[in-house]
Image 1 (tube, protein in one colour):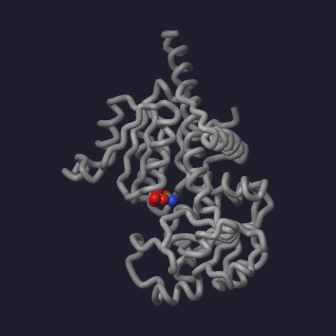
Image 2: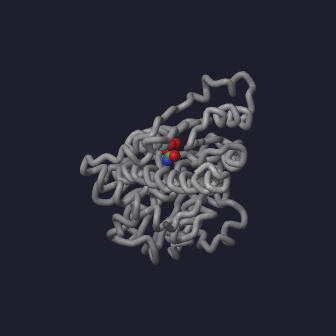
Image 3: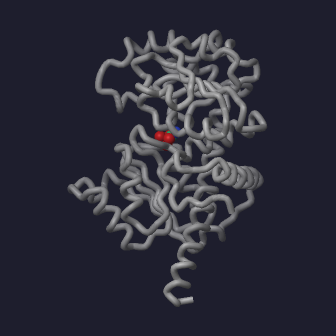
Length: 321
Ligand code: CP
């Protein structure tokens, strides 16, 4: 099997063949989900704990659904009402849960690097559900599966990622995945929302949206991450929409069959015109949500296989098998 990772902490450590393996399995799960077929034996002996230290709708619901579809015992902890509120640290919380022997830990945290740190302290396979501005690997994988289904491939495409690049873990994970799969990536946004040194990632940078969208296959819009902004990064939402919001005139610069994506949650009339978001001929936003379940099923299936293999090896080494 070409998926060697012990945890899914980011796209950065994954090799292209591991990404392809995961997408192929997710494609199978997507078809099975549509056909109503279930696979409740895949994680039948496993416990999955979900910990969200930051709000989520799509990621939290789809990880929970994915675990249940695969037969895991799934437990979601409301961190807002946990002992974290009494001052318990992330690591102490992780060690406490580790003592209950979970197999899969799904974690979202507002601090970049927090999920990697936690993974070093526990025996479970850890899945990063988004950490600060760092990575959101399952979002990039579900975006890749959505693109592959719409375009028939996930290489040699021209993809524009537009908006608040500086604060976006979605952008970071997508830039890495699309680069590993040999696509051309353009970043479009105001200079105030473009991280310094980003051109080193092998991307083209534009502050003019009309020019940046010229001839692209995929238009990926991003949310303005106001919760990560501690100052005035844009003059006003009205001005931002005028220059960087996706409307019909700007979309006309892309290829006629270009697809429109947004990871959600969307701010209609700020990042994207609502009629484009709802246009079933251009927008694949609902497909992104659907693929989120399939990708998370595939990720947990592959990590569980590696976890079982590692445990079997340990048992052999200890002479208990
Ligand atoms: N795209 C995404 O991560 O959405 P949620 O914050 O709703 O999980």
